[in-house]
Length: 110
Image 1 (spheres, rainbow, N blue to C red):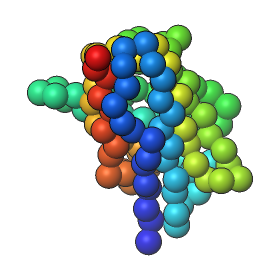
Image 2: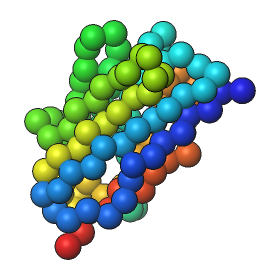
Image 3: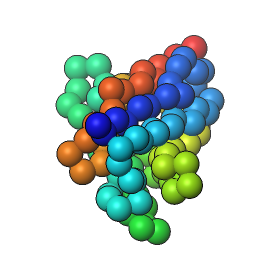
Image 4: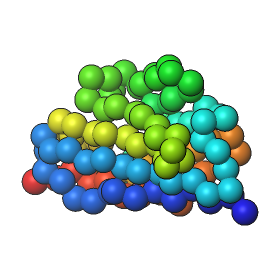
């Protein structure tokens, strides 16, 4: 059974940092394109960052602030988020192939 489990969300002040993790079981991340999406209040789901092989891509809104990475030994994908803004508030989801995690809430507020 395939499972993607996100963790690392929480409440952070503007300008702060968080690192999200997405751990996979029954599935090997390195074989697939892996992405982080987010869905903010009253918004559609937005692609945030993607990693495939050694290549990464980012939404313009997070370039220079977020970094996606993958640890193949741990079968885990990360999203390091720095200089967080209130508009980054959303539920963040991990995706690979047909599989989605359950999401982790990130709230940026003073």
